[in-house]
Every structure is written in C-alpha cells, then in structure tokens.
Amino acid sequence: MSNTITDTNFSFPNQKSVYKGKVREVYSLENDVLVMIATDRLSAFDVVMPKGIPYKGQILNQIATKMMAATADIVPNWLTATPDPNVAIGHACEPFMVEMVIRGYMSGHAAREYKAGRRMLCGVTMPEGMQENDKFPEPIITPATKAEQGNHDEDISKEDILKRAIVSEADYEVLEKYTKALFQRGTAIAAEQGLILVDTKYEFGKTQDGKIVLIDEIHTPDSSRYFYADGYQERQDRGEAQKQLSKEFVRQWLISNNFQGLEGQTVPHMSDAYIDTVSERYIELYENITGETFVKADISNIQERIEANVLAYLG
Image 1 (cartoon, one colour):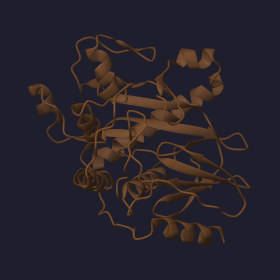
Image 2: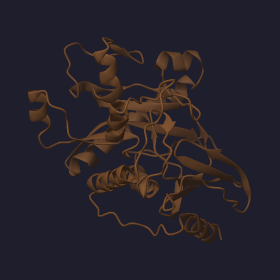
Image 3: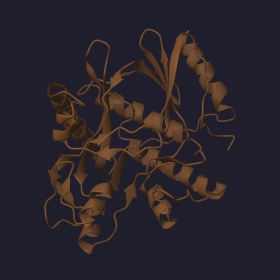
C-alpha cells in the first residue's frame, strides 16, 4: 500500500549506520544520537507480514513515547525528542540481548505452555489448578533472548542468562527491579482506562556512561496484552475467552489460516479489506490505551514528511 511505510533508506547528517528490526529502523548518528523510525510493518510469530498496516507505526510510536513520559520518574529512558509521529530520537545505547517479559496473568505463550502440560516457564514454576487467563499470585518474569529478524526469540531462565554471562548479575538485578516497577506503573495506568495489563515486555540498554535505561517500545499493543477489566471475573467464572486489546487478534487469524511461523508454512493472503480492519483495530487500541482520540497524520507521502521533520530537528 502506498499509504504505509514498510522500508526506509534515509541519509541523515553524520549518519554512521542503520539497523533494521522487525518493526523499527534505527539510524545511528555521531555524538551518540539514535533516530528510531516506527514503520507500518506487522510482525507475528517472529515473521514480518508482506503488507504494512496504515497508521500502525504512528500508533506504536505515540503510545510508546507517551508511556515513557509517564514512567520517566521511576525508570530512566533513552528518549529525548519526537519530531515526527513515527519518529523517536534519543541516546545511543548498547542493548542487553534479553527481553524482560513480565506476566501478571496466565495468557498467550504461558497458557499454551500450560495447556501442553508444562508447569515451568523460564525457570519459574506456574501453580497447579490454573485456568487460562487466571491471575498469577505474583507477576512472573519470563525472559527471552533477542533474535535477529527472521529468527525466533527463545525462552531463557535467569539462571541461564547469568551462567552464559549474557547479562552480569549486578545488571540483571537492576533489569528485574525496573521491570517490576514499570509493570506496576503500567498496571495502574491501564486501570485508569478500565483495562488490565496482562503481560508485556521491556527492553533495556546501557548508555555510553554506563547508565541502564529503558529503550524501544513500552506498553504498546505489539509488546503488551490488555484485557477489559469490566466483566473480566464473570468471563473467567463462565470459562469464556477474555475481551482483549493486543495484536492477539492477528495471531488468532493467522492460526485459523494455518500459520504459526513454523517451517513449511506460508503466510496467508491479507486482502486490502482485512488490512483496513487491522488498521481500525490498532486505532481502537490506541484510543482505549491512552484515553485520547487518535489524530491521523498526513500519509500522502510519509517518507518525505519524516525526512523533513527529522532534518528540521537535527538543524
């Protein structure tokens, strides 16, 4: 679709390198400046879908930057400016090669593991007698290794992270503390909107002067799962599926079309009509998560708009 941004090829002043992740493209500039562009790419089961979703990048970027502002008092982050709806600019960091996943409820991947009869996830024991979407007695941290594009993130325990020296023990203690603090704040923010923050992931990095900061996205529908609080317990009591706000609806559509990112499987065709419904769902997610009306940016020429706004900011 011409009104989406799925790939960029900018050349900013003092540019050193470009890293392309599943959804974001990161331009490294001199003086430890990073320009992060949220594209409209859609990733599910660690596979990037062939078509972009209109406004998705704007939605993810604006939720993430709002949530960083709302948590900066408890956890420092990399962000310094947002000169464009799809762009965040901040300090260059050396990322930790683990994603800190935290789960307040037994949903998604945890529920699939539980159904398969496994009670241990990333070295953490899940209690017996739980049903899908039940609340854990305490949130559990279930880290994952960070994969390159096209590869799958893998579950890993704290013990293995330390044993393999992926993160030092001192640093891991900070990551764990920050993860719990962010989840607690995210839970409170969600509750104000009538939502339950079910699970989420955080990524961290180290600045050039050795400070650990939050990087990437936070509390977006791509990195988090939300339930509607209203009627949650009644649905649990009746054994019904929960009403949720996340990109799980995309995963379920793919599963129903025989795709889970496994070898030999082909991504099903996404019609323009289906793409439009996904875009509408993302706008609904934005408005429910932030409590604000979504304002669509001009997408007549996104590449030109981004370039002009970034160059104006860089001066």
